Length: 60
Image (cartoon, rainbow, N blue to C red; front, top):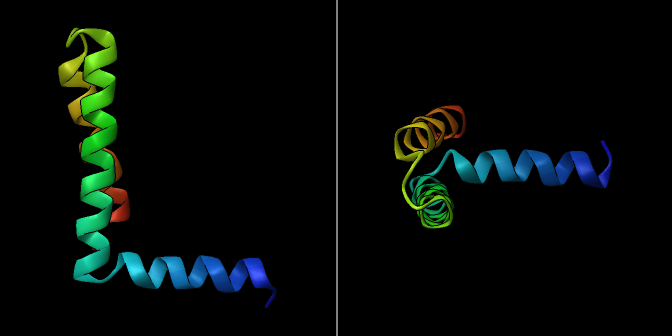
């Protein structure tokens, strides 16, 4: 395996931990908050659904 493959594997391993889950939740929450601010809350439901879908895909 190359360097990139090793880094991807380590990232996946980290996201599978409780700490990784907390970090991903914080990042996704921050992105959702910023998106809601930028859109004036017009798309809050869609942003929330996207946040949940991303969390489901990343989470453990």
